[in-house]
Image (cartoon, rainbow, N blue to C red; front, side, top):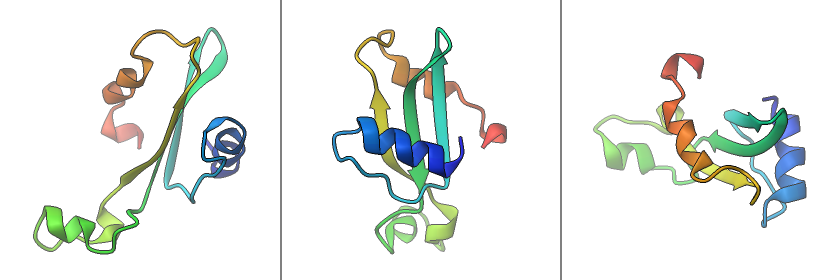
Length: 89
């Protein structure tokens, strides 16, 4: 999804009413309605990637920034994001 659309959605529905600049925003539709959104971006911690692997930089690492699902969504809908293929990102 475009960053602007993700930002508007999170500002309206997420409890923080904010959304940092995302690198990837993924929306999941159920019954033709946007029901879940997950937003990834560069880590806020400058040295996060290097703490995970040698030589890692924040440009090579993504952090989960926001996740939102409506209560009416099917059970465990967030787990379906685990099936997203890396090629689509």
